[in-house]
Amino acid sequence: MTLVVDNATLGTPYWWEHGAALPSFSSELPSKTQLLIVGAGYTGLSAAIAAHDAGAKVVVVDAGIPGLGASTRNGGMFGPHPRLGFDTLAAKFGQEAANGIYNESQSAFDFTTNLIKQENINCHFEQCGRIQLAWTKAHLQSQRRQVEKIKQVSNINVEIVEQAELDTEINSPCYFGGIRFPDHASLHPRQFHDGLIRAVVERGIAIVQKCAIQTVERIKSEHQKKQFLATAKSGKKMYCEKVVMATNGYTQGKFTWFASRVFPLPSYLIATEPLSSNLIESLAPGRRMMVETRARHSYFRISPDGTRILFGGRASMTPINAQRAAKRLHQTLCEVWPELSSTRVAHSWMGNTGYSFNHVPQIGTHQGINYSMGYSGSGVVLAPYLGAKAAWMALGDERGMSAYQHSDFASKWFFHGGKPRFLHPANTWYRQVVDRMESNRAKRDQRS
Image (tube, rainbow, N blue to C red; front, top):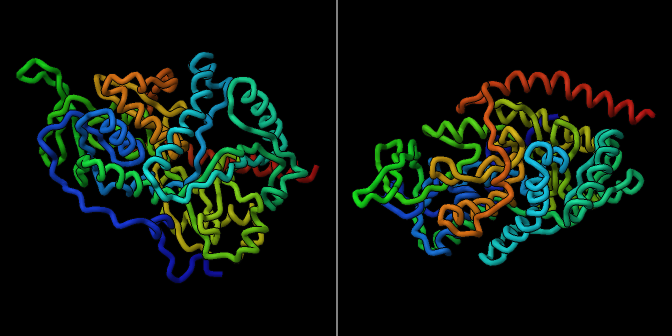
């Protein structure tokens, strides 16, 4: 069988087939503004809306074309619950911070949901729920403890799905149960970003594209008022009173402090060729967002139009070409659903997840520069929410307060920004050791 269809668009996200034509933005950096926002993804655009509506003069600057980064390359899974368990968060940052982060989940969900509604963004938003599927019996037992803890410390709606009822969610031989998050949702990431672009443009906010900001220096103006001087790669300069860094996994320039704390972790996705509605219904009758507990971090869903399976995960921790990624993801897809072995791939692409070393999104201020980044795979909800928080923080607005300010924005001695070369040995370890161990454990559990 040929793996990909004849007209496959390898390297181009499936989502881009359904995007609006982007406006033509200037590449000229204005001479001054009140608030400079670096990055025009979900974070930066939401920050721009929040700041403008609070009365600020705003300019958004992107190193490339807005929307070509992770904001339009992700899986469109809409859920804010923390990646780490409560006890792990409490051990890292303290009980109060852990309580705050867990209880802020609903605020983040409500904020981004309301943003979509208020700006009339048509992005196939659907509150379909999410299920986290247990790869082994031990994973299911861990999930039971996790659900019990979540119910104790938060208002997150969550429930255990036993193996006996799993066929109402997914028809696969692989899983032992799972956690269901009924309130989670899905959307079309490109159309969401298109809607945010439209909202920013309609407010008259300037967006500058293909203008990489290299440095931001703190200076004193002739009136002794503290300001910042931003310098682009072209040499153009801009004066501004406040700055928000919203670059996440695409940080460029001489921003070592930020770049050494968030590293780009590639995430790969494929879209199948169109499938029959009967086959789609038999594969995933629950029609939810689906993720796994195994370290391969597979995540998958039905496309918004109901015709394809979109399947993502750790094809590699390091850059590989779209054909190779498609082959690996297709193999994993067929583990989950063996009946798709003859199904071909129509799209294969990747995007950089901005990952923090403590697996928690980060918001705060460093040397006067405000930032929101490091979403670690939870950016669809949290990037717009924390982007607005960072903008309010920059303006001295009390709405900028967040429990995420109390998480430690950690760095590691072995990474100073740039290419995360430490991922090469990590990739080998996970592929050759961890994945094999988890696969063997699952096989033993299936036999017992």
